[in-house]
Length: 451
Image (cartoon, rainbow, N blue to C red; front, top):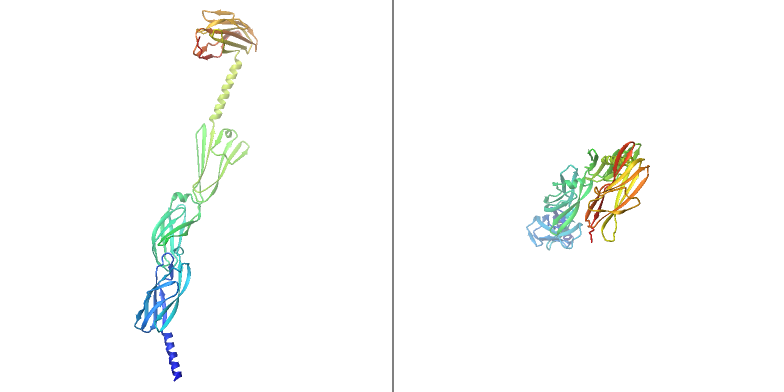
């Protein structure tokens, strides 16, 4: 009898073990840290006996509904919802144990594996390979997990674009969007891989992550050269980097040994190479995308013409001076008188540059002054009061011989302003002809008045 009871007990226990086959199906095993959207779990227990049941766990998740429910027997199928509690705050993979409790009969334990991650780790963001001719970038947004993302607001910021939009992504879905590019920024950006700053708006605040932007390398330098002008010849050379890589460029301008003397540059050349009568000026520079090396070279042919004209005028002047047989220099100075009258001392210097004969020097007295009857070393040969002239008869002079004459004029009436004196005149004979020459002009500025 005892053995029979033990056998019946074993059969009953085996019936319980084989009868409750518990399994679960999850719509996802991913819990988003920022959203904590409930996971839907459908629990199935085949061969469940009639009775009262409930499901519970002592892990860091909550299973709802938690209340006891009644089952009429047969396969048990019921939907539950899983959410993390406040103790579960570190991202990672977790294994949780839950219990299907057939109240006062038996308990069956099962385990589930859940992943707690940030939405920043769910999205993968990148672009297509962008060329310098593109006006739009194609941004690829991929959902890396088995979870639905609904109405997610995302902002993208990079070196060539800024864009914001709201998206919905199915599990493991990849979506491609077209974003306008700033053409000006694209032209100034070097080729390479750049970071896209991605900001996701969530119920718990903004979450930041990054993506990758791929900018294809394109190397191209545009050369421009222009020349204009005749007397002032201007040559302008531009090297423009219209690609998106850093380029080393050079400009070479050739001149000869004459033109280089009258040539100027907007920037100093980095090298000068002389080869016989030729001179090569070189500019080397490293320019970034959308930058320009601009070289302006000016050759001023007007300058040598002006120099030649100045030399010619100087030559003519010197030649005329050398050819001038007699030279007269006239000067004036103020002298003080005891009575305070206005008085000037006239100084005449006569120099013979060649042998001359019968030299006569004549000077005129201005109408507003009188001649003072006292002279320097040589008294005038003739004084003509009517014509207001004084005259020295000098005679013959040898080349290089000089004569100096002085006289004084005065006025009882003060003189204001500019007082101009007539030119002195010399008459002489040379090679059988009569010649005449005059002195320089002389004037005097005065503010004197008589007492």
